[in-house]
Image (cartoon, rainbow, N blue to C red; front, top):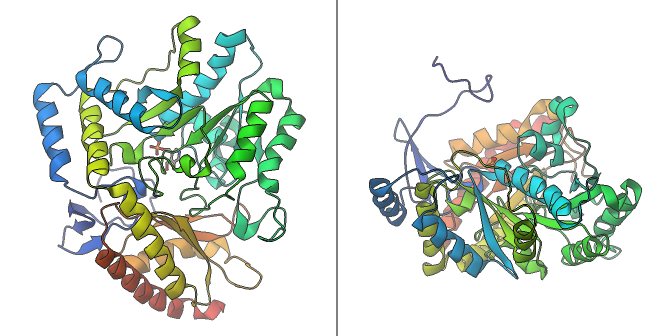
Length: 445
Ligand SMILES: Cc1ncc(COP(=O)(O)O)c(C=O)c1O
């Protein structure tokens, strides 16, 4: 027994000793493929020499200076680099320390934008989707649409939610052939019901994360959403905390939909786990509104924009570009998805295998034909994860996908440096793990 207050007090945690490339090693020397990069974080794998060098050099110069007083070379370099990569006029970088801080900042920025622009005091709510995850702080959790919000419901803000873009379990009962992207149109329905004059923004993940197991919206989804947002004067926020910086095979996942949002929230892969960092990438027009208005956005967090994290992010992003890792994510991602579909779909309990680039999800079900989920009490997403760990693979489980309570899925998001041979190794280990899991759940067939 140690004195750490873990997040799940009923679970035993393995102790990590070190990491190298796409592998993590425990205290007993056992090797695990980090097939979820922690939580879609360690995009360059572990102990990357270039990042370690950049960290060491920056730490020797100055690790921390507070943003209320100082700017620094690394934050300016990072902002220029991000501006050169982000679509459209998304050129301004507001720095924080993580994903929840980024979505929280975007929500406050959206509210203040309408105050600054035309003194609209009532336009402050944010619409989001069911089955989304936007973080654990109160504002971020108010936008979140998965079961993690339930316990804290009395603390949350009165923010509306719309239907998820969830083709496997279409909320409108449609199939691919009959789909008219009703999930995108649902945004307009909710805006009309709630009143556009109360809504500041719509926030969505371009590809869903662990809360839903990498659901990929219809190709026209964000085009329709963009038009609706423009029509009702509502900002579009792409939450790319998981997807940003190459995860789905594009620098930003939203680019594949041919749409430019008003803000992008980023974190995780931006500093790839080497030092905490998050950011909101903001359109010039919004920045100018603040500049011409009060000139102040009071949303500082102490560690936001520290030079050490910024130097790490510069090294991470330059490595992504120079080593062609976004392309690797696209190419190995589609190979991996094809292999997983071929080798996992035959299992009687595998309902869906989906994703984009190196962000993929597997959903398991009790009945493939009806898509009936296993009861939540069985905790099968967690059990499957533990079985896969015995086969040397770490994935990221989630539950509640089917109806808010039941439903088991997991996320696969290996480091973007993964090779084709390692992808084969991953698939073989998964097949062996699934075969063992199959035996352990045969009584539910
Ligand atoms: C899409 C998305 N937004 C926000 C967050 C919250 O980020 P953090 O855990 O860094 O606060 C997450 C975390 O998983 C996420 O996936």
